[in-house]
Amino acid sequence: MKAGIHPDYREVLFHDVSNDFKFITRSTIGTRETGDFEGKQYPLVKIEVSSESHPFYTGKHKIVDTAGRVEKFRQKFGAVGSKTQVSKG
Image (cartoon, rainbow, N blue to C red; front, side, top):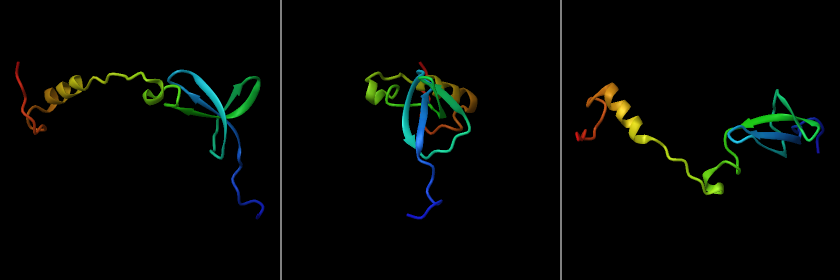
């Protein structure tokens, strides 16, 4: 192998910020932050979703309020921006 052409493959701390879950794996990702895990400093990567918080793995589904979003859109744009019928009732 040629020297100096491969990225630095090292242990990295991933932090799932949605439920404060942390885990260590090896990666070549570049980071500017560091984090402490079990008394040792690691490069830190903050993520929104991991296997500890994803509904597919946890079995817990979050209900998204799409009706409120649609109503807000219709109030803002009226019937001009929507191709669907506005039901009144």
